Structures are given as C-alpha cells and as structure tokens.
Image (tube, rainbow, N blue to C red):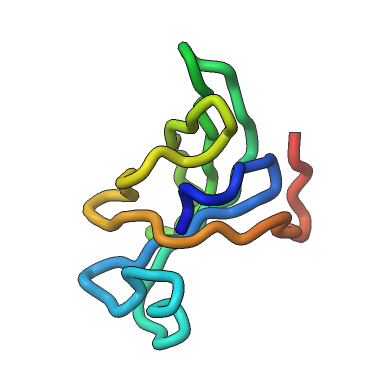
Amino acid sequence: RPEEAPLEVGDSVHSGRDGSSATSFEGILKGGPSHMRVVTKIEAAGSGFVARLNGGNEGNKVGEGRVKLDKDRKMITGQKYGDDTYNAIYKYVLVVGQRMI
C-alpha cells in the first residue's frame, strides 16, 4: 500500500482508472487502464510534506499533481488522481531524457 513506504524524489505513484482491476497492487498484474506519475520535488508543508508529481498520458502532455505526505514522508491514505485512488509506489524510477531536480 502507498502509505507503507516513504516517498523520495525519483519514485513514482500508480493508480488504476475508469474502474479498472488495478485498484490494488495485486490488481496491477491483471492490466487495465492506469496512470503513473513520478515524484519530482518534495517540500515541507505544515506538519508534513507535499510531493510534486509529474506524468500522465492524456493529450500528449505531462500533467502535474500533488499528494500530501505525513512527517515520515509516507503518503496519507486515500489520496486520488481524479476519481482513482493511488494503489502502489515504485521506488527510484529512471526517466530517460529527464533531469530530476
């Protein structure tokens, strides 16, 4: 579950979409439409942090999003990308051709 691992720059978060089977980490293996965004920046915010996410696949553009993190940089439960809950974190994703700042 996403709330079990601290997020770092270079990690990515995954969500199923359109009611796909990818509503859990195990469901990802079944396939279906999904989204993945890469963490590009983490900033202090109140008693926790906010992670800036970049990615997406609509309209041939890279979208931006944010998720709230607790004091240990773990994602707060139940956060969503649109209507779909984030269901997995991939650690240290390499994005070819992109410099992570």
